[in-house]
Image (cartoon, rainbow, N blue to C red; front, side, top):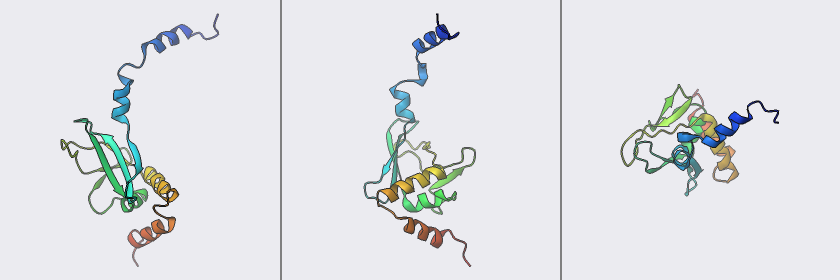
Length: 140
């Protein structure tokens, strides 16, 4: 006899699986892969369009990662701030169907990617600090 009063329920639920919340399709749909861009100038976010399902790559240069890592919007109007979710989302649409790209990048994620760039020797802490001082520090 088991000490688990819910063993029969757990066995039944485990046998059901997760239904629509399980499987390669959902994992494939919700997975965003990040990697250093091939030319070393920033990070690439690889994902699938929610509307058409085609593969997309959103490339984010170091300058934008630095600015968003400080919780600010880049001045180039490439991004907008999603206050509800506390992240930045690209303004551009899917290159295949034009639908909104559902990718949110938080300041913490930007800073983690900057740290990965430092570790890969693609950008230095000094370059980041210099960029912040030259572009984000209050002017006197």
